[in-house]
Image 1: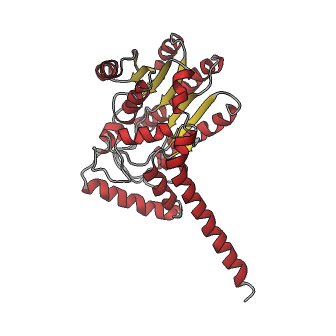
Image 2 (image 1 turned 90 degrees about the vertical axis):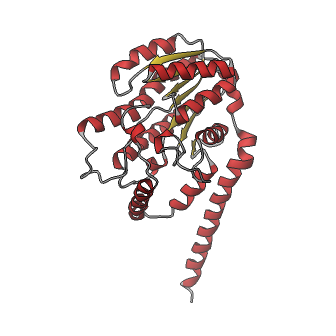
Image 3 (image 1 turned 90 degrees about the horizontal axis):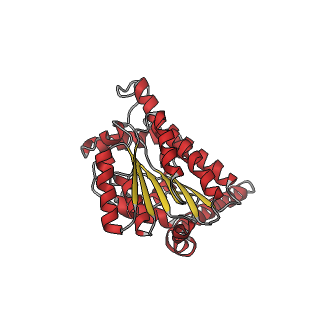
Length: 316
């Protein structure tokens, strides 16, 4: 019948579009990052890389990878003992200069001291806004016990203010430099892309990271600075109890190496092909089904005895 034809054409066009999207993912994470990655430009863009939340997990690996590229590293985190340990490891293994700044990012008074430390740097190649915290588990916003006024304040202070303020402190200095290939890398989360029941407040803070990065990237579109938002799913780190790794749950080293290679390839990236493919298929689900997906993940966390305490107690 005549009315079936346009429906069939629309369906085929939809399938073609989805196939193209999937092929683009595969291309970007295989051939594309080899052809278009701007990671190698960081060394000529400046002398220093600044990494927040740099004492373990993704932040620590970013610091190590950037040091392996020959950049000097400024580490900013809360625990001074851990900062000294990581700084010594980087100096010993990669033979680059390091500096440390102790900062509790749930306290807004730390930023003048950070500004002084940044002003003393000769030039900046890269800023990695990694510091963050999250919930101890997935639960309903209205009935869970862990959501208190202090928790809400600390989560917003730790997940949003560092991205906004650190970018504001570093970006003018970068713009004054006569180099190309500089980068600001903001660590977001896939949960910031859409409604995420049982992770409501955390996903809202990550949505701000994505939107702020997106807007600033257009402001800097004619400049020499790459603004990249990295949106991981699960990565096997201390945050999730170093759970067993599968294709969809890489370790921090594999994840960061992949994400850095995506610099200049994608402004908003999932960082790792397993996460990109996972997000591709989850995006077909309506928001209603995300609730049941999160309930499944909550069951999975309990079954594997994973507790997200390391990110719920403090900013890392």
